[in-house]
Amino acid sequence: MNLQEAAAQAQAYAEAGDERAIADLRRKWEDELESAARHSDYRIRAVAYRAIGQFRFRQKLELLHRGLEDESPACRGSALVSLELLSRDGPAPVNQSRRLLHEMANGDDNEAVRRLAIVCLKNGSPQRETIVLLGGLAESDEESRELKETARKVAAQLTKKSRER
Picture: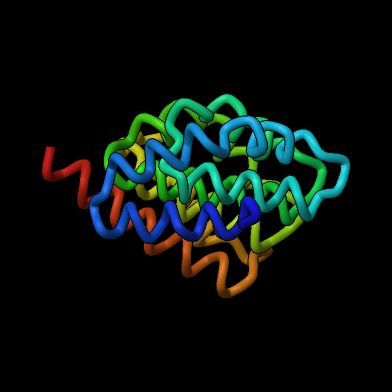
């Protein structure tokens, strides 16, 4: 079994609610995951960053932040997918990364990465500066239709969440 297969197994355990099995996999694969995240090949790093979320490895948020700043769009995207997954249970992972997510949503070179950063923001606390940023992206004539629509939807979700508080 390789890291990608182990991460898929951890995802299946998580969906089944088997926390003990996930913990066992984490212990078994922790060192390999750390090594893969530092590998010179971006494809291996991308698998590692994606695995952090599949393993529900909250202790690896600092490592995941390195993925958000990786030179490779594939690695940044994988890290964003994991961050979104980890933030479904609470806003802390997104809130800790908010500044970087704002930067990525507003100006990453890769549009798919920008949209993923916007999607991550929906799981954070509904802060005014995030809603304003997303509203500006949604109204910009310089952005693609897909990015504008994603920003519009997430801004609406956060606005609704802020009113429910």
